[in-house]
Image 1 (cartoon, rainbow, N blue to C red):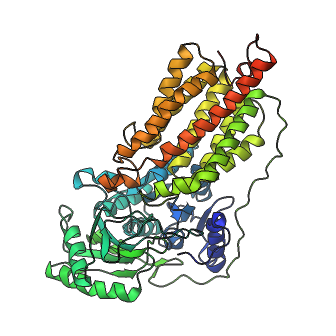
Image 2: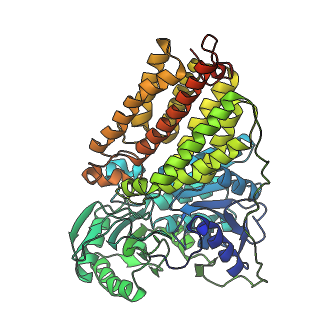
Image 3: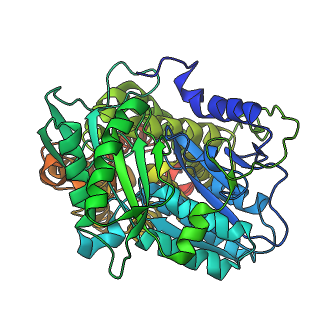
Length: 588
């Protein structure tokens, strides 16, 4: 388990603060962001390589910032993607005039947040490209290679792109090289025991001591199949055979190799395994170039390891050999040392005091967010339990962070239900991170945008329908994929029907709730098709989707707020149009 921490919620910030204090000769904090960049910032005229993802993976991602590797790394909470706002601030901080390449593992939350940051930077004239790492052969079959997740092969892609950027290649060239490295990289991993979040007493998953998991992820996900524990020689054969079965077309006989420890597997154990791996590779006629044995992409304290092979040609071999000088990886002659700098946590913008807003719609939004926050805080362990089936168990923690931030932002924002919801959505997305942060940010923003333009129950239904369309586009998902959409879409369908029939919002919302509950319950019989858990297949059946469950809880709490407001309005003035309709939150 994780032994050294203060408040678990502050783990990321304190980790980054300590890292920059220890390795100020290599890197510095990006102002106002949970990110680090190369000491002195970007090099003028050189492409900037921005990498990132959740914390819990050190040396990835922040430990790989420095000469010859990444220009900057954006850091999310443990196993949670950084927000679009944090990624955008980092892109602007490393804008050298030559453009930027973003590269990260192919996970839904990262794709959404980094994608939004890229679009925003592009809209302001910055040339930004993205290369997803998709090296994990266990996460999807070859015909769906683009859907595979990125694990330890992140490193070889980052190394190739970083070396190309360091020598002055154009953005087109850096992007091409990164794609080439990814296309030639394959990884397969195993787990012997799960990992434990700071402050938690139990691991995200357990493994029978006599068994092991094949095809693990790096977010605490269990493997795609369980087998009897293998000897080092048997394990080497399983890993090598799996990777060689997917040798890239036209590949030569020279490979870069990474035998990567996941956190608790000791180096001596890795060397025992390496001896058998190298024997098998030699028997297949493969030559190794610059093999790396150790920890480059970890998963907190997970017991496990992975084997990565990148098939090299002359171009990739030169980039693999190129010098690099970062806190966690050094190759070739180091750069001259400079005086270290101790940096503090990222500056937090001053927050305005809570507003005394008489707008009824705004007060209802604040009340709904507060009740949703309290409900999720209380029942967060249940969300963690459900999410542990998919691996990382962080959904509840992310929802708590997001709802706390959303409720705080709502309390400081005036101007009616629309502006309050928009502010809450931005705060939720920034603080929660991950796929849930992006999707809930869209949900609140789209609803707020509609209510800022017009009022009434029809506006609420239209705003939710707009949110559904944008969430499906952004998340590349649909009902049936075992996501929160399986609860939200039937709820919106039922709400629209009741509003069209003339129900006031409170009554329509209450009538639509059973559809959300049924949708959430129905996800228990589905196989996950999106996100990290998609690789688990039948192992994910039998447990409802935590995102659908938490969404339903929030809809239930909102129903209670609307019902209370409706009762008060009727009691105060039974014969007049409800005040909440006039303020833009509910109507006939």
